[in-house]
Amino acid sequence: MMKKTIYIMLLMCSFYALAQKKQTDKKVLMVVSSYGKDMGKTRPGYEFDEFSQAYLIFKNNGLSVDVASPKGGSVEPDNFNADKIYNKIALEDSNTKILLENTIPTVAINPKKYDAIYIVGGKGAMFDLPYDPSLQDIILDLYKRDETVISSVCHGPASFVNVKSDNEYIIKDVEITGFCNIEEELFGKKWVKEFPFSLETKLESRGAIFKQADFMLSKVVASGKFVTGQNPFSTTGSAEAVVKSLGLKPVKRTLYKDEKSVYLIQDLLDNTISYTKAAKELKENTSLYDVEIIAVYGYYKVLAAKDNLETMTKGLQLVELTSPHYFNENLQYFLASTYVKINKPEKAKPILKELISKDILKEQATKLLQKIK
Image (cartoon, rainbow, N blue to C red):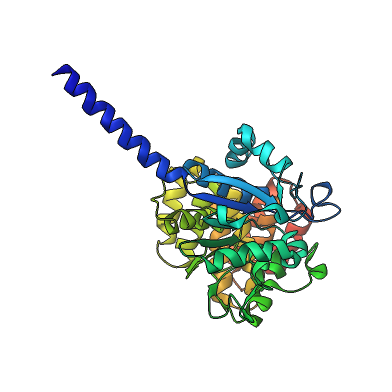
């Protein structure tokens, strides 16, 4: 009886090992830009946040990962926050340094070894990835083979714009997302004027059907072989969509603070939850959120609203939502001055009085308060 039990247990272990092996048989090629220099000061590079989040999802789901770049060798990201949890975990992974300091030149890649390609974004992607013929060959090979996935995030879809099959762009009639024009307008101030093209406009000119959410909210689009994410906050969603497209079920994980924050913003803007419920959630679980992200998003929402009162009000709500948990004098003054602008002085007054009492931006706050009395 004992021998039979041991045999059954060994058999079960063998089946488990076989199941795990099936997962690791899937191989993903991650591609990053070679363009970066001086952590983005001299030339923009790839986004480490996007690399680390996608890499960890692929690794934790049993996928084998190689990293390539147009030039090969060591690659430089733009400056990033190494204290963010996903970056810390990736940097502590002994394999990460090896992969990023020894990227495989795209010319040396055999695309038939890979089931999927995942192209990391960052502004550097706009300068070298669209013009790399070897990368185009890799993408085209995956495009022509069955059961493969072509994926990217943020500026990564720039890699697709010059790839053709039978004299037709491969993204024609494909639903695609990526860093959109309004996001460039709001957040692309340093390098956008040097870009060879506008990503959204170029994708559409190649026949792609461009899809987008509101700026800097999560948006993942799966269309045929293609999986694309709109911006950095779409990284985890797009990486998990790749896992699903490869026939695997993504492992459960705890959402990062910035993810939860963006989802809360999204729910509030979409009226999925009320302001009262959002405030209650933030009060009870403050430590699970990046409150600054919510506040700053509200600021940009107001800026983007221009004269649209409904949109401006949504932005103001987001800043208000964070006020009990996050204080920034410039943001508070901006909040008060916007209330004055939309003729709601009763909401501006307590904010201005608080600034005056704390002797912060006192002169500006006093002048504005006198103006509305």
